[in-house]
Image (cartoon, rainbow, N blue to C red; front, top):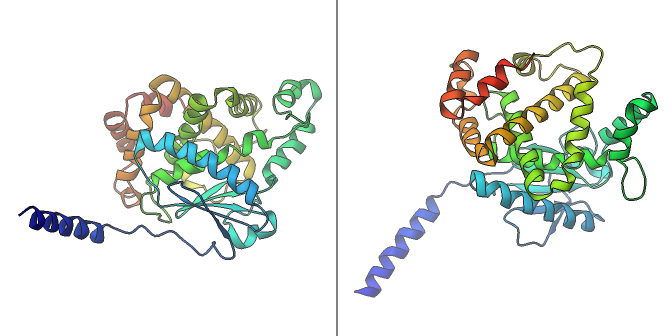
Length: 305
């Protein structure tokens, strides 16, 4: 009887497993990459010659994944791609070489310094010295070199948080880009605040400097503008939005704690792209207040103040 019972249970388990939905990852960017042997819940692929950087990045992403998944639940159907600049056009999506990104189940990071970090260094060095002394001091690395990679390399955790928002590895997955971005920055801020507090200054210092010294002209400023003009705004305008999103993320995590990541992630998944024509801005605000936390009304209403 026990033997028959065991067979019956085994058949149920096998049937359940076989019917489990397989989540596909876009593998069009995996050509010629090498798989890193790890015990991590995700796979890591890397450009030839970049095994050391792949090990470093895979360890960091594993730590962050374990931290975030304990809060939001698992979402391990993704790949980490560590791409050399020579392979960037072939194996990455972003036009900015080395810039962390997430798309359809692929979390992509550069194996070398990304172009945006170099661009920010040039921009900051062009400002009056008395304006940037403290900022340059903060982002001076162990080799006594001014290095904005100390900020931009950490954005891989922002992109990892996008992975949690996208349970089926889709091209477009939510009703609101600005909400996605605030949540992704919440994941970034929560991870470093909790696990690496000594490195938190590398996130907040540039954000504070940027907000206190905005670009002289911003064509788009509202949350609605961000969604409506996402693909057409210039890099300066987009970058300033991200600084404000990160600042908002800091306020939310400091006020509500890391646990708020989960209900907001659930909200983003629930109100996916199919809701775009069903909810207006006021409806979205009300649902955020009732289904996530009323504190989000304060963030939204105070956005342009």
